[in-house]
Length: 299
Ligand code: 13P
Ligand code: SF4
Image (cartoon, helix red, strand yellow):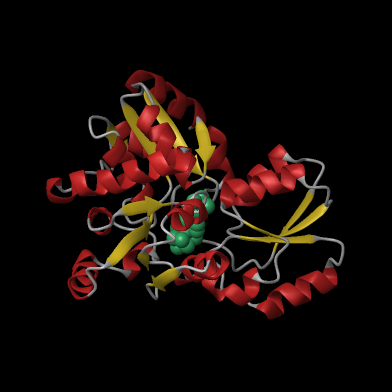
């Protein structure tokens, strides 16, 4: 299967991109593994004709927005992100009609329709920087209330957070953290900003997936209690083999991220499924929000 994936990849001049939450065997056949931001940049800059995106729908859609002339394949068409579905373009349009003075900042975990109605997009790796850049604005942040409220407090922003959340990270509790800290008193607790504020307050480090991996590689702690999706442990162990990483709870498993298998990657390459298209009525607007993110992020 792996050899055939490699053969098909060559034949089609394809590249396989995978998020850190993918199954270990899927991460291992990828040409590039990364967080939402790095994967977007890879998609924008690749010379491949086909991008096989091992992740969830909004990620493949963002890749298609950035590389509209390429074929972007999502191996499992129903691999979605429940957080992205917490706001529709119609809901955002209605909010904007009532609140025309708010600058709309959308998390990349959103649909192209929502991005098209937003002033700028952000990912976990640049959200703080970009939100702080808009500190003199009245902001609406969609759809993640946890990341939004965290940045609001940290930078003293006039920010309204849409009441959306990631069903995996939002379930983390201080009780879970306290119990694990008791078990591993010497460990650092590190967490993704999609977790609730009281859980973030317990952390030694808060960051997106790339930031979490870098922290494990660079900080002096030997053991880490990891408050994000368990797929990330695979790369942490590869990149920091001398460190010990444990997931905060086995419940930290994103079922949508885990839908993609070697079999579905193989099928994707063999049958060109499932090709992602973006409605032309929203593509230009969504691209504008992503381009603005790229420009602000690199500043
Ligand atoms: P990152 O941008 O940190 O990779 O996060 C993506 C995501 O879906 C987190 O739940
Ligand atoms: Fe979406 Fe949460 Fe899964 Fe990330 S972990 S893709 S935010 S449901």
